[in-house]
Amino acid sequence: MENKKLQSAIEQWEKLQPLSENNRDRLSRRFTIDFNYNSNHIEGNTLTYGQTELLLLFGKVVGEANFRDCEEMKASNVGLQMMLVESSDKQLPLTQNFIRTLHRTLLREDYTVYRTLPGGVQTSYVIHAGQYKTRPNSVITRYGDRFEYASPEETPALMADLVDWYNQTEQEGKLSPIDLAILFHYRYIRIHPFEDGNGRIARLMVNYILSRHGYPMIVVRSRLKQEYLEALHRADLIVGASPADGAHASLKAIRPFHKYMTNLIAKEVTNDVLFVTEKAENIWWYDGERIVFRTPSYGKILHELRIESKATLAYLQTEIGINRSAIQKILQNLQEKGYIERDADGTWRVFITPSM
Image 1 (cartoon, one colour):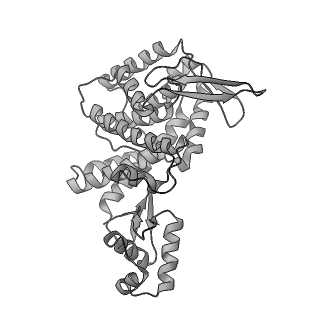
Image 2: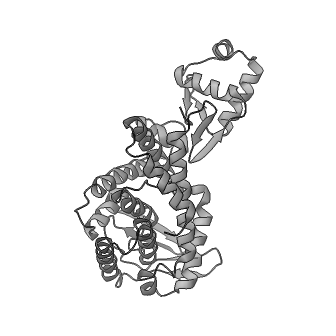
């Protein structure tokens, strides 16, 4: 772990330990929404950030929400909680069975995928929850070339190697937990052991390793999806196309992905430190971004909406002391950003988190 920003962030984080119960709860709530929203959004889930929060924290479905996406998001959160329980037992080694169980939890059940081949021929195949792939899988990169993952025949042995390597390396302490998490992610992705859900499992496993060693967990933001995939691709070019080489890649060989991930972890940990330590009415947080409002009225309106969910323009004008047109403009700006929503019955929903 040579990244100076990362080392500094980790040192600042360690100085804050142990966290108060209130700060642990605030971080847990924020991470639950951020992780599930982003990890699923990367894979095409259509729920908004606000819909994700209402679904996972309050069990409510609002607006036009796809049923399958809702079920997928709930299963994702169950998988996250399962991972946290598993990572808390430091004496328990990683097993293939846990990874397959995690996959079964995320996918919930077997399902059929239908495809139209060139020429209009219809085909279908079954995705098996919790079972390694039975069909070859590959990806078309943004450069147009096809990249093959491990074959179904290779997969069981490569996964056995991966899990054995992880347990032995962890026990020997040859790599820092952060380097171990990054390398595990890369090797796992090069195997791509399942027919669906591999990215979600990889991101859960990074946090399994970080959490297991007392490090704060991180979120790969969906808005940075292309940077994330590009870092993986640049590492692939160095490692080579052979799935076996990818499944046994060295930390040095994956340096573009390692650099990307260490920078990402440094930023995520720094934000966790700021989230816990900064206390100001004008500083708020939304999907991993630190929002600083230049006008005090924004923070005041948000605080009022959190207290009085049925607040009217007249109420806000009385409490804040600015004219209605200014309040309407602020509310419109907050709604356009996704920070707040208003239900049909006039109830305000606030999805942006205060620093106080």
